Image (cartoon, rainbow, N blue to C red):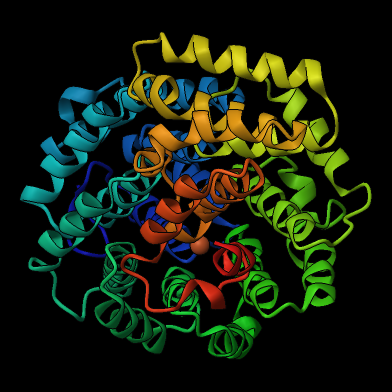
Length: 447
Ligand SMILES: [Fe+2]
């Protein structure tokens, strides 16, 4: 047995393997691109090191890409021999990965929560549950989970900054902006490379309409983003969103091409269809077009990726983004295949099946109808589920385009009652008036 960086027992007798495992966790928490290299080092030092195999499996699942599930299953299989010698905590990680591969996300989360109840400093269980709650839209559970674990942490333990940054994002998505900003800034003060804390504060500034502050915030930290993974694309997307709100569309397009959707950049070439990158790109092109900005042929390469990922429904929130690209690029057959694949996924037995059946399919169909100019159909599809959109996962800032889409369609359909209701609901809980939000201002003035 060897202790990890927080003193939890690891079933390996190799100090080198344990050190490499800690380095891999550190890379994961800081969104560095070298985590896989550290896992390889851990396994080179101890080929039977179960937690290193499991971490490799977790990383495969984190891509939300069905093509990577066999790699996760292989990692799980490699961790199984000698499972009876593992600690209870490690066996729960094994159960969590097995359930995740089976698409049973609630069982997965249950295993991580069981770990955290006994070992709140298991930062891997903490970070993975935070991430998966987020992509299930379960923001109250996301915040509760980290606050519960935080009580068992000492501020001096390595990884405490991650607790703060997860706390910050949990508060932010629950609308507690003061607590969110304080925790996020504290995380970044501890470590300017804390990209999740950076991101949480960026969300606060977006939600409160503090766009210039947001630009300054990210500008002051961008020097720390070298060597980081695709989260930096998302941070640049957030900066683009501030500029979009301010009407600075040339800057948005420049950021799109140079910072968050450059197909030739090494990061994008390594993972050209990564879910978060697709979300960033499609959502921004849609916003730009809605503001009257021509985006040229930018939809086409996204539509190519969408066609290639047909039937991969592991990420609910990405589905309507695939559809944004397919619809915009006029890929009608592929768009219909996407609708059909979501209907089929809705009949499945995994945790996302009810999400696809209840929400994802309707939103994807609404995206297609919006592009076709069938405004009443957009309203028919989105109105009944407008308060269920959270089930797609993702953030308030990200999901906003589907609310904009409903409001826009209601206005174009001449449905003033629906429009006024949607606008009134959109205003609820926001400090910034709709007349100062680009996605709603023209509609609010007309209503
Ligand atoms: Fe974000």
